[in-house]
Structure formats: structure tokens, C-alpha cells
Length: 222
Image 1 (tube, helix red, strand yellow):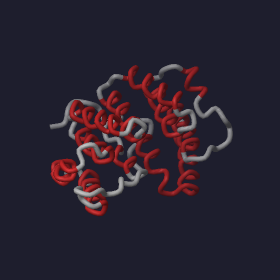
Image 2 (cartoon, helix red, strand yellow):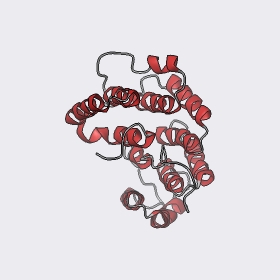
Image 3 (spheres, helix red, strand yellow):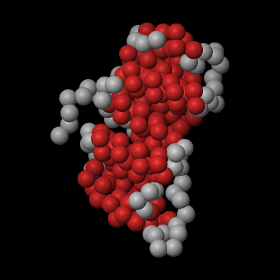
């Protein structure tokens, strides 16, 4: 049963981040990389189709054989997040980071849990710290900006994010500019930036678009 949390930041596409990483090679005594990859794909498909119990069922035997695999744990955590089982999701993300401390997807998703729990200050502080550690990570910078805009928080920090007048190396600058336009009520101009971003980056814009919609700054209607 879903909780009373509002739409904002609920249905984050956390699983998309998983696709940025390759599975670890197989070792003797464990399922092959192909079987693990097939399980990951099947579980991701189930997640995308909101068939959460099926996704967990698919992951169970692979996780039993690979209990410390960060990608598998992160995917399990993403499914728990969709089920509003935030405590269980946090355990998965923490385990993923114990196994691979630098695993970005799990670190990013831990911050998302704070927002889902309405711990807005903690979420903002979390992503601010993560951005200090990874100053060139434009997805983190974008996420932080969306949180600040959502909460009408720290205008000075907002102004420092994507302060350049020129596009950067990812779709983030276009989406950040659009988010600011949506916030100010200029949706027509905002959509122009999104159109340019999609024309340039194509499928790379998916996670940025999802975050924008879920922030509540843009209508879900495309």
C-alpha cells in the first residue's frame, strides 16, 4: 500500500542509474555474468512495469549467490524504494556501499530516500556534500538545484549552480535552465530549452527529464 507521500520525488528513475554500470565478471562457483546480466535485465523490466514482487523474486537467487554485488543490491534497493519500504532500501544501498564505497548509484539513491521521507534539509545537505566530493558531477548538481527550487531554499546557493551562460557537457545545463524557467512561471521558454536538449542528447536526457517531472516543477504531460 502506498503511503501518503505526495507525487514530488516519489517515482524517481533510480534504476536508470544501474544501466551506467557493467556487471562484474563471473568467478568460479557463481552464476555466469550472462545469467546475472539476464536477471538484472529481467528485474529492471519488472521494476519498469511496476511488477515489484516479480522483480524481487527474480533477484533473490542471484543475490543469494552474489550477496555483496553492489549493482544487484542497488537494484533491490530501488525496488524496495518503489514499494515505500525505505528502511529496507537503505539497508540495500548501505550494503552496496560497504562492498563498493565509491559506487555512485547507491550513493545517489541514499540521498533520494531522504527526499522521499520529506527530510528536505538532510537531502539538500547530502547532495551538497556529494557535490563537494564530485564537483564535476552535473547530475548531482542538477539534483541539488531541483531540491533547492522545490523548497525555495538558499537562493545564494541556487545562483551558484550552473552559473555559466554556456551549455556544459551533459543535458544538465539545459534542464537546469528549464527548471528555473518553470519555477518563475515561464513554461514556454522552459520547453524550448528541453526541446534543444532532446535534439542534442536524445536518450541521454531521460533521467534529467524524469527528475524534472518528479520535482513538480513541470507538468507530467509531455
